[in-house]
Length: 126
Image (cartoon, rainbow, N blue to C red; front, side, top):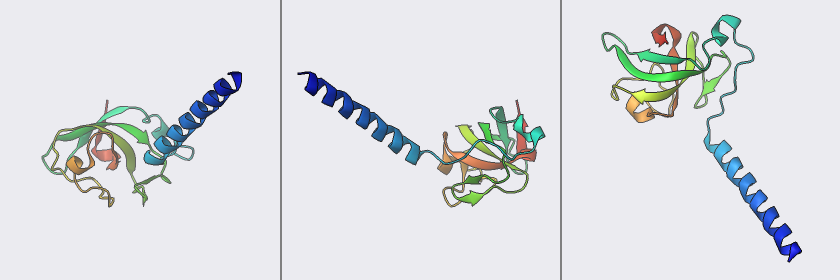
């Protein structure tokens, strides 16, 4: 009986490790800043409004996730002057992304929870 309990515990631990591994595979690989300039680091974790092109106004809301210029989003290098933002709300789903990345071309295609590049001059940090 003790042997059965030990084996059950081992099986449960293995299942939990497999679940964590699978979750890590589905999450975007965006490392926290280690090489970003110190003035930009203060923006990580800040809520922001994403401003659209022209007179679109606020097209989405999100949170600054990464400011490291060496970061990538969907295998695309971060453009100069851009931050990685995780979308929390899409207001105008047909609004184009600041930079298309092969994953999506509009905010609606990307959707809440997605990581996008957005120019810091087109962000209103809260």
